[in-house]
Image (cartoon, rainbow, N blue to C red; front, side, top):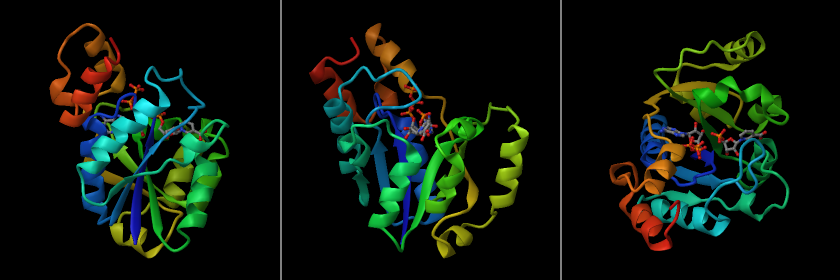
Length: 209
Ligand SMILES: Nc1ncnc2c1ncn2[C@@H]1O[C@H](COP(=O)(O)OP(=O)(O)OP(=O)(O)O)[C@@H](O)[C@H]1O
Ligand SMILES: O=C(O)c1ccc[n+]([C@@H]2O[C@H](COP(=O)([O-])O)[C@@H](O)[C@H]2O)c1
């Protein structure tokens, strides 16, 4: 069985996340889709919404798709959310599954700053979502690493449980949570960028105003 995982701050979760995830899951033939909200993001300012609110929004989105679930592991930890530690824990829980961690290619460009980044592939594959406007070349060490582990066929992700890097066909829509928070704060409409259930929740909780 294959599980695709998208980790994020989700402040809030938006259609960019939702559509990229649905399309990548379809392309890879994944049976399960896992949304992984982080607890204490190690690498960025802390979220505006509370942990409970971010979790509620992610759960509203998961509920609108068959086979999508929310993984609370990082929310239950007191320490910063280091992905390698999370994947190690998820690997113990799902020893026989193919696990594919999806990240944007902007995140890939910064991968060497992640805690123990070279161990990520011990526990999962990396599936890369492409940002068409990003033409930033990878630094040499990372480019070589990618070349060593890159596979061209989805079947290789299905046949192995971890260890491969695969560039998905799904591209990143130019939607960001930062822009959505700014729109809500200035009373501009972000309606078509959000799942309707999340839109209603933000309104009801008076978030980002
Ligand atoms: N529009 C998008 N399409 C596809 N993937 C996205 C999009 N926006 C973010 N992602 C990916 O989703 C993951 C989690 O993103 P995150 O929660 O930080 O959202 P964000 O919109 O980038 O937030 P912020 O603007 O607050 O930084 C990352 O791997 C990121 O590359
Ligand atoms: O493990 C790390 O060191 C690490 C460093 C940066 C980001 N992450 C995780 O990567 C995912 C995407 O993060 P972002 O906000 O950089 O798009 C999210 O789940 C973060 O918690 C993880």
